[in-house]
Length: 264
Length: 322
Ligand SMILES: Cc1cc2nc3c(=O)[nH]c(=O)nc-3n(C[C@H](O)[C@H](O)[C@H](O)COP(=O)(O)OP(=O)(O)OC[C@H]3O[C@@H](n4cnc5c(N)ncnc54)[C@H](O)[C@@H]3O)c2cc1C
Image (cartoon, each protein chain N blue to C red):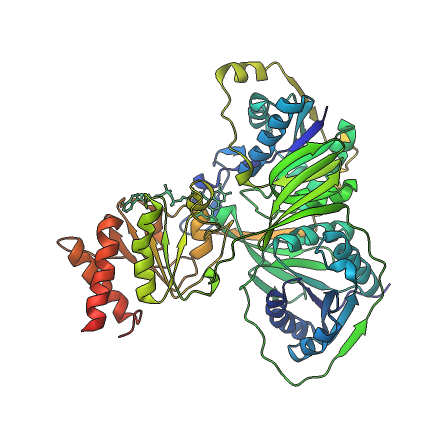
């Protein structure tokens, strides 16, 4: 019976980010938070494996903030147990640090067969944490997976690459990163949500993982973010009008020809 | 220990390698250091010389049949070994899916930082690498720098121009490295349907979204694209949910910057915009006047694509004839 750890990031909901019009700085502080999209696919896949083969699904999050509500959603979706590593000093840590903390947490959680992650997160989209974590744990990794099955001691995964699909096999324990295509995450029912509040929830500080506070956050990270601004987008926004669709189309056609598209 | 110097470039994708070579040359000149290509593969020795003409000062070649299956571990061990031995200051790695995994694992072994998908790379007055990338699914542009070396960045295809061939001299260095065995086994390879035209190459793209109701209706976009000498594109739901296509434009798909992008019946959610924002001229046709695509458009039509698109093709056809 497999024991599966799913790494989930509490990410900013990118569709609710506002921009300060004078400085072009992003206002992310009041944007709602949620489980990053592809991480949800990873969790869904783990729960489906458990439904088939039994076993246990463990949700793991590292966050500077209190991510309890987010992790409760993971429990409602079917995780059996949640681990939250939280410490304000974690703020602005890069993937090198995040993967280190995750590795420490995984070691403390104990034995496992699979770790599932999303291919990347919606806020940073760097696709680093999964492979970095596998490297730290010294286990095989299969990235960009759209189909997954377990066979004895092995995991079989179909990767979606630019030039081909590749079916790869690895001995467990192994780490898999999944893409959206792999499944449609469930929406938990009310009874599931109620059940979730009774499930085991463990919170660890960095101290408890033996990670020193000086080695995380901006000071410990090897990549430092200097600034984040909204992209410049000066577009003409010329509205093409007309009495009817034909007239509009003609006016647009004129504009395009004038711009040099569709040469005579 | 020696200090870190030289700029390195690696990709298993040759076009991408050349594009990074051009940027790498610029960075190496700024730092007054050498530019090296790491050439890993099976029977590739004879490809080394030309890379010097494309701007490399040095080409490190590891020629080994273990590279043939494109599995990560041989590449990873070769790069780790070389980087530990020669200590480059900057490494640029091609951001294919394989390259992304490789870069993340390499920088973990080297305990250093990685900036993914940098689209701008510069050297600041302290000789640090400054890398710029898209964050928050396209809502933001982050400028980042490093506190450790080597400073590693991945670069997506088509981000930088290819270099021109020049008469120049350099050095080809063959290196022997003990390569690690793959930790995974490839048991099957299935081809993906390869399109005749690469959408990244299209000068004009007519793109459709969920406003296109049936696959057959895509014909009207194709007609317009053909007339304009362009190609059709689409949003992700048309590929992933409706399975009409195998690729899409956007953050998680293809990044395009054509001269003209005609967005038809697509809302312009930030993840889509992230892939086409740099188009020279953007036309948006959408019946919802609040559609976010209008924020990034040069020409706006608030109307039904089923009315406008065929009429536009017709109007253009007439005007071109007369
Ligand atoms: C992490 C992540 C990554 C993603 N990456 C990508 C990506 O790379 N690329 C991508 O495209 N998406 C991506 N998405 C999905 C993205 O968020 C949107 O869901 C998607 O782009 C919306 O597609 P759409 O515009 O076709 O559909 P919709 O948002 O449903 O828009 C349809 C539009 O058509 C208009 N319309 C309908 N009928 C007509 C008509 N007859 N005439 C005129 N207008 C009409 C409507 O007004 C509406 O604005 C990603 C999502 C996530 C979470």
